[in-house]
Length: 165
Image (cartoon, rainbow, N blue to C red; front, top):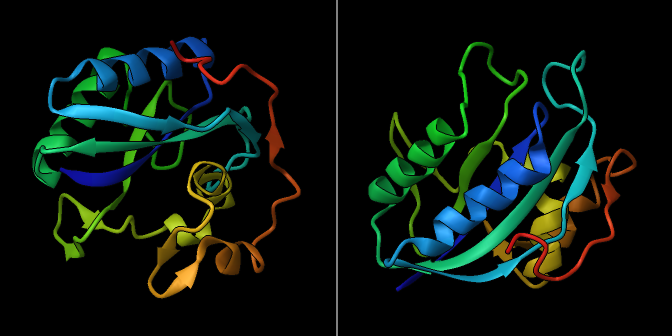
């Protein structure tokens, strides 16, 4: 079983319901065990700024799925949530990204691991730090990356530990 960290987010529709449904679908897969889920963070849009704020969270899972099979599951969950890929970095109902797949570094057209822009995105690193504060990526701690990023636009929402169940 490999440890994997996923980032989830969205900014249109009922995002809280979409995030919870996505996490439950991940947890229902017999090849996955959800280990931890962050709270939800309200964040400013990234890339295209003229759109509603996003709501983001991260989850740590253990899985025997290959990175390719896990990517297919993530895309199936996005499709079930009516995710439309019209504009890069544009509005979306749900986004499920593989951030880190323990022990795997790859640069393939369909999937690059670790996620190629993860270390530039405080909206991914802040919830990731909440569930795995000592995580090291590329030889540096999450805190090291966060020191150079603007986190002013990130608001942690108060919610129960098992908000997604």
